[in-house]
Length: 115
Length: 497
Image 1 (cartoon, rainbow over the protein chains, first blue to last red):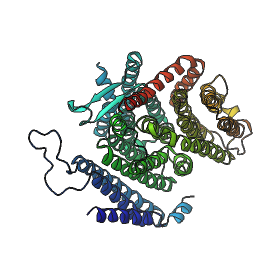
Image 2 (image 1 turned 45 degrees about the vertical axis):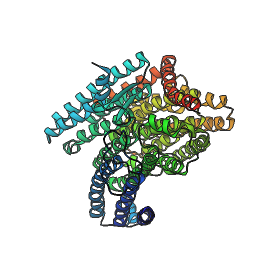
Image 3 (image 1 turned 45 degrees about the horizontal axis):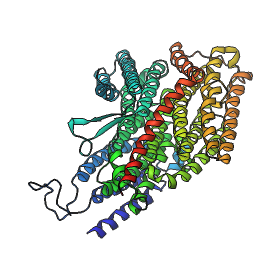
Image 4 (image 1 turned 90 degrees about the horizontal axis):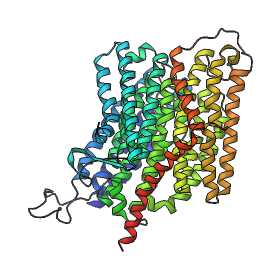
């Protein structure tokens, strides 16, 4: 399982970076979205992947039994997902504006048209 | 007022008032009053907090909701945080005053005040928190507000610069998130003090090293250090004058602050490894920044490149990693924020008076507005490092520390960069003020209200220069606290095995 997730994470990041390096605005946007997912997935997995049982501390114990993933990482990811969602929404609006005002979707052409 | 309350006010006040601004959408006069009032109150609260922390000389720890450090999110207000928050409040207050004259009615109507207050909320949060994930959240608050402010700035030219700024900052946020995620997996907590405790001296762990590299990239982009700074001169000169001044003063310094907190505090055990990186990066940033400025003819482009070159001095101080270097860095940061914001303010007034920002088109301002010339000369000479202004002492302290650790090459570079800075400033001076105006177009007047923030910041620069003793003493005290945070950890490490 860990291997699959690790490969998935690497693929997401690689595709994200590849798209980000493109000159087309919309591919940049997609690249950002994928990179966001890669980062989120990394935080999610960093606390470990459990066996699917509920992370409740048993009576009398002070911590979770060994081998249990830390549920706090998932709470962190929730926050991070919401944040990246918001920022991406802003980004879409911005790039749409850039496209509409200049009629360009190419970054280099956009830079020239603004000069 | 309890100190715990005062420590939360720098966040609560701007946040609450930003909501108040939204109640009066479209009523520009009301919005302006609310923003200036909020910044004034915030300045008052921050001064109180600063005084308290300085007098008591103990860092203030606040756990929210009564949950203590390993569980809850904690704020940690030492003198460094308090100083940064105070300077932020000062810049925010001056920015609000300047915006009264600079920002147009349409932009105010588009909730400019709301975003300005939100930006200050985010910056203050980043300065006060002691939790890495919380830092990430405050970074996002700050960035969202700055994205909006940048796009609101001017109608033309803004979109391209904003796009670069938004994309690179999002990438930096992902680096930060990935870095802190890996760190969480290893340390099980993101409170900076606890990270330092738990990691101990496991500095050769590959996951920690990866996380360290990711954080280095994330903060490096935000601070605008050597190969990662290209977004800064592309975006700052294209936005409004108030936005550029506030961004130029504060945003990159939040990145530098994060560097000091994380790599000077929690990751201090890495200092042998990171020290050389920081010294090399710092010197490269200094030199490339100042050379970039020398080749520009557009006032705010010159100033933007100088932000980069000054960031180099600060990163260099982190690389030297001595208590004295930290003190020098803190003094330098305060000086730099005030002077840089002031220069951007004056650049706005120059552009308004001469109706151009291109130095080739400007001229004759010395004759037409001598007051402006004086107000430009004070921060410009201070940036260039002319005694007895604050910039001279800031550079002196840094170079002294470099000599102290026998880094003579570094000290030479720092001196040369200082000289080139002066060259850029004299370039603006002789082109905009001394030479005759190349055009016969009549000059405009800048709004009188803009003189107030510039005069305030000028007098503070003079105060920092003439009152260098007490102000450096405060920097030393702040550096001492930051240093002790490391050394107590170091002591614990030594006693454990």
